[in-house]
Image (cartoon, rainbow, N blue to C red; front, side, top):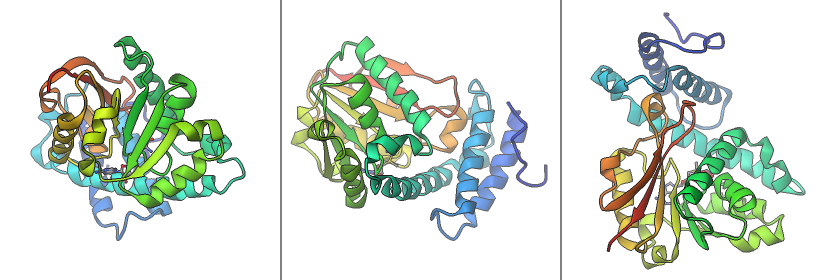
Length: 285
Ligand SMILES: C[S@@+](CC[C@H](N)C(=O)[O-])C[C@H]1O[C@@H](n2cnc3c(N)ncnc32)[C@H](O)[C@@H]1O
């Protein structure tokens, strides 16, 4: 294949085709002037997601050539910037509707968030976190769908403190949630770099870290170490990670990166476009 091939007719591709196509896609993405929301950026983001969904989740990418594995960090950066901009733009439009919460189903990745919120709530319950009183969601974004779906479908008495470094994103998120007074009482939005939040982290029964907080493994490990330092003993930590081809979109966190936590469970999806989720418990100070 000498160009980025339309993948619409494929249900699965070989590692060889994946490598050929991801290198070509990365070359195109590297030439972008900006990750700003445009038809070209959306097409490239869609191609990246589609390509990663076609490589069987059983494929062990560790054997891929170094030059292929080395493009992951720049693709993670692209995905984070492009998704972040897309999130603010589409959420801003939704937030201007008369009842924004009724329109969140229009959000491009809504179905994915329904899947992940259901799965994360299920593994929390299965591991004894039946009714968390207070949850911190770190990296909630302009469209805080994860905490909205958890609060309205799965954890109906839990209070969510949503932390995001971007005040613009929080402003949009507050507007979306304000259309439901009861929900608004349980959903607060704080503009903070999570690395600046300290003792307060000890208040939460559960802390959830969004996939795009920490854009490479090193910065994720630093954030995880910070959260662990301040979270309470017995507190639960939910870390969204990635496996296989999905690490070309999101940074991955390995079991060994979570030091001094009790392993409760690790969820590995069969659907390539769903996060992996690591559930851990802080056992001792
Ligand atoms: C794109 S959103 C994804 C979350 C998604 N809306 C959800 O409901 O799961 C990721 C967010 O993390 C925020 N973020 C990145 N680094 C952060 C940090 N160090 N502290 C707090 N928020 C951060 C970004 O501003 C961005 O809004």
